[in-house]
Length: 284
Image (cartoon, rainbow, N blue to C red; front, side):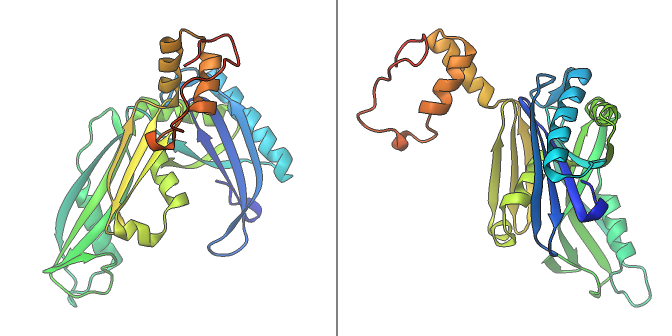
């Protein structure tokens, strides 16, 4: 995202499309969208970058369209990250509250979160360490422990890692497009921040983001992330199955999916059995 001139820019790298959105903060909790840009991309498959040159070109196209609409140059961005190399797990740790007053300080919170981070393989890198809840002595389910009194501070965190190769390829594409990357955000976590309220997170909610090649999942419980994962299947797999089943090319199969497809069986009209062909493919 770009903080310059009170504006924010973000890039969503998808398996079929690259999207850029530019927003401007109009209050503490509100952002006005002032520019968007979309470009087709064939350099990403199942969330993984397979062609750096093609992906970089698509990023530039999407950025140019967003700049034109927003009327300003984009130089700093936050970018999403997903793919089969994403790993996530929950972890716990306990530290002693060592100051004389036995009051939880920011240093205590930092120490317990660092202690809760598990060792990661040499080919992985930590993306997020999301605190789920804290405990101070026998008091549990605490969201903000600062200022509380006790002798023992425990933290439960959700740790997300990504493959180093995936991260390096992503960095090369962003740098190749002449952009400065401020941060990376797990795709499912970014989606949840966009659509969930704090009440829904407390109640317990799952967000399932189905893309072209990847399905991202994040589950909240008691206000914190308790699970996140990536399934290497998406809308392209449905299109491929339709193409094979109807013996038709991928292009008309995509039309069939979008025009006649339903996610729920009860959404299909009882009388709907056959459709006339809009291309040269069989009816069904």
